[in-house]
Length: 264
Image (cartoon, rainbow, N blue to C red; front, side, top):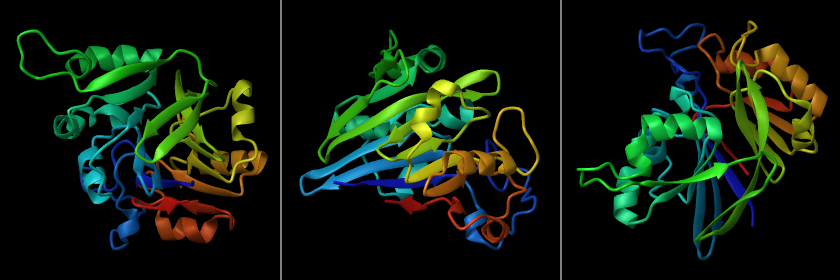
């Protein structure tokens, strides 16, 4: 059984174009430059059905999942608590009502503290309301411990690992020989092993100039050269990174993401 990875969104926190109409250096005539906020779908399909894991509930999640024809999630993994990774959280309500089953959520303590405060009603039914809780909190107390999610298509296994994202930590996830690092500015030594021997690394490459909380293009390429995945996909792309120009500039084993890109 193999996994399919779908980049639901590959844009930076404001998407491309930004709400003020700014496309930056991106050609608005190229649909691959229209980017929603970062999120990834992982699926395993068998004759019995499909197991589906979503990494992050971006503000664009509803449209992303409709485009991907997804009507159920067996689990949600969170990389961290920032708005562009979490604020689509309530939109899974329709799935839960249809299935009459809460969705399993896996997140670290810092993310759980924020989300259970900001969206507490999603995890526990608020007093005096008729709206039931829709999510079940599964705490990632320590990275580097395998997570197993079982659904109709069997079990998807993932290994969370620590990343540095400016002045906070974020989580990366390794699924077999594919790793996802959407929001990262440095790699702690204890995570090096998680990035070795990869078939594919989906990696943050925010913009051309250095940034305090994200890899910029040259840093991402340097890390790709260091860990040597067979292939790398750049994500979290800002308005200064035009898709066609990136295709022309990048090494043969590195490609820019676009919304809807699939890797298997």
